Image (tube, rainbow, N blue to C red; front, side, top):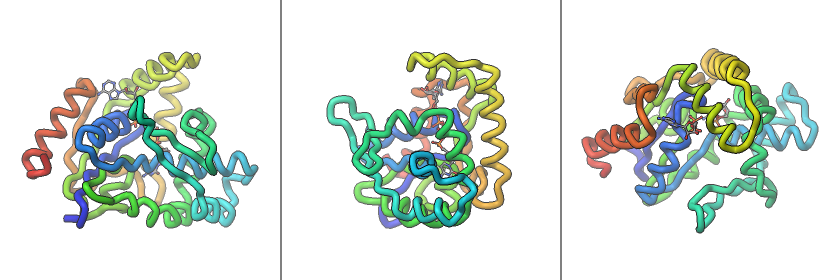
Length: 227
Ligand SMILES: Nc1ncnc2c1ncn2[C@@H]1O[C@H](COP(=O)(O)OP(=O)(O)O)[C@@H](O)[C@H]1O
Ligand SMILES: Nc1ccn([C@H]2C[C@H](O)[C@@H](COP(=O)(O)OP(=O)(O)O)O2)c(=O)n1
């Protein structure tokens, strides 16, 4: 067990881990770590500074010195993400940044330089940590670990709806292919690959709504005395 209670929620793109982690953190009144955002911010900062995605020395320096802050907007309870005082909450979600983030995330020096920063999010009264390696690498002693997944087809459909709701024109075949390619890169990389921790509770959300996933997670939290 960790000093401050930590819940880890790992899983592939579009499994719903971001939605579920954010709702759970709000409902518990705990802190939230969106670790994927740190990789996205590193990628965005590299694109802005025109640093090549194979320049390991420059990228790891960028990750180390990233000037980022996460702020909760009082009216909407939505998280706003700032890079050097610029609100980049939307910029970090573009396809270009998503693709670049998964490349940057495969560099071990970048991961090492983001490690301590991520652990610093574990503050009282507790932390919900969302990512790929929260339960395996960053918080191996977490109080409870979840790995949430869904079929690639379902995840592509969810992403399509999400983009359409934002008024973004999208193509289901392209989204599906991107998801499969990103899954492959995230799972096959040598360092911190996308894998459930051996002690993770695995939830297949393909047939479930967000509320049903939360109900299932909370039942496990109750069982562990965390609720
Ligand atoms: N269980 C679910 N059923 C249906 N849609 C979901 C479910 N979980 C998440 N979604 C929707 O799918 C989209 C992707 O979810 P998100 O939380 O961003 O995934 P991730 O963080 O794993 O990439 C969002 O629009 C979200 O509202
Ligand atoms: N702990 C983490 C979190 C994300 N990553 C990688 C995986 C993805 O390619 C990028 C972006 O992650 P993010 O969770 O924001 O992406 P999705 O919302 O799941 O599509 O970073 C990682 O390697 N380790």
